[in-house]
Length: 285
Figure: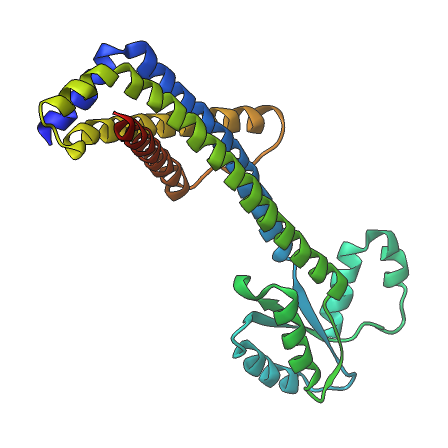
C-alpha cells in the first residue's frame, strides 16, 4: 500500500504538467456538472416555494357553530397528509380581505353585512403537495356535512406537478449527458498518463509483476486526481454562486452533503477512468 501511494505521488512529480492538465480537465468537467447542479438546486427550491402555497380551503355553511368546525379540525389534522388546519371566522375573513385587497378597501368598509363565509384552511405536509393527494384530501373534506364548498386551484396544482416532472426528466437527461462526457474526457487524460509510462509497464510485466501490482498505483493516481478535481470544481462553483448572488439574483448553494457528493463523484470518475485506461493498455501489452 505504501509503495502504491509513493508511486502514485511520484507520478505527479515526474510529470507535473500532465498531472496538472488531468486535474484541471477533471475540475472543469465537474464544474460544468456543478453549474448545472446549482441550476437544478435553485429550480427545485423555487418549485418547493411554490408548493408551499398549495392549500385547500373548505368553506363552511352559514350558521354552522364554531364548536362543530373546531371538532372537525381535530379530525382533519389526524389525516396523514395534513400538516395543520386553521379555522377562519367570517370576521377574520373580512379583516383579511380589507388588508390584502387594498383597492377594494373602501367598498369593503361600507358593507352593511359580511358576505364572506367562515372557512377551514388546510395545509398539507411537503411530501403530499401533489395533485393526487390534494384531490384525495379535498374529497374527504367534502364529506363533512357542514362544508359548503372546497377550493384548492386544481389547474394550478396540476401544472405544478407537470413542472416537477419536466424538471426531474431534464435534470436526469442533462446531468447524465454531462457525467458521460466528463468520464470520457477524464478517461482520455488519464490514458495519456498511462501511455507515458508504457515502457515502464512493459518492463514490469517482463520481470513478473502482476496486473494488480501494476494497476493499483494508477488507480490511486486517478482517484487522487478525481478528488482534487472535485474539490476544485466545488470551489469554482462557489465562486460562480457568489458572483451570481452579488450581481444578478439571490440563490441557494449546495448543502455540505451535496458538495461532498461532487467530490466523491470526481473521485469515482477518476478511479473508473483510470481503471478503464490501464485495463485497456494492459490487454495490449
